[in-house]
Length: 220
Image (cartoon, rainbow, N blue to C red):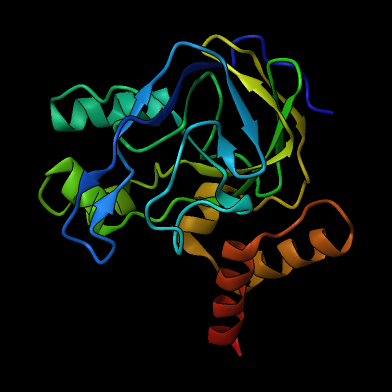
C-alpha cells in the first residue's frame, strides 16, 4: 500500500450543467461541467445526475469519471492567459496534490471514506473539446503537452465532495503511466500491461484493450 499523502485532495466535484448544442455528429455535448456543492454519489456509471452525450466515446464503466489535476490546469492558465476553472475541461474531479498524469494504469485511489476508483486510461482530446475551448489548434497543443488527465472506473461506490482526501491505495508496479502510454504507447508497454492483468494486478477496460490491440497490430 502506498503511503498516504495528506496534501492530495479533491478541489471540486463537477457534473453537467446543461446539454449544449454542438456541431459534431451527436448534435449536443455534455462537456459543460460545473462544480456542485452537495456531496454526490459515485457509482459504476459515474456521478449522480451526470450524463454523457456521446456514449460511444465517453462514459461506461471504464470511463465513469474523469479527473484532472489543478497543477496541470495552472500550466494551461499560464499558457493561455485565462483562468481554467474546475469543469472547463469536462472533468468530474479537479484534484490537488495528486500526480494524475503520473498515475499507473490500474492504480487505485480511495477518496473520502468509501469511494475507491481505478485509473483506466488517458483522455484523448477531440473536436468537441476544441470547440469548447475556442483555442487555435487546441487538440494538437493539448496532445503535445501531455497533460491529459485520467479516466476512472468506480471499484467501490461511495460519495465524493470538495475537500475529500485522496489516498493512493494500490500501484500495480508495471510502470506504465497515463502520460507514458499517451505519449508513446509501444509494444513493451502493452506487454507490461497484459502481464499485469494476467497476474491479477489490474483490470484492463475496453478503451485500453482496444488501444493495446492497435499497438500490438502495428508491432506484428
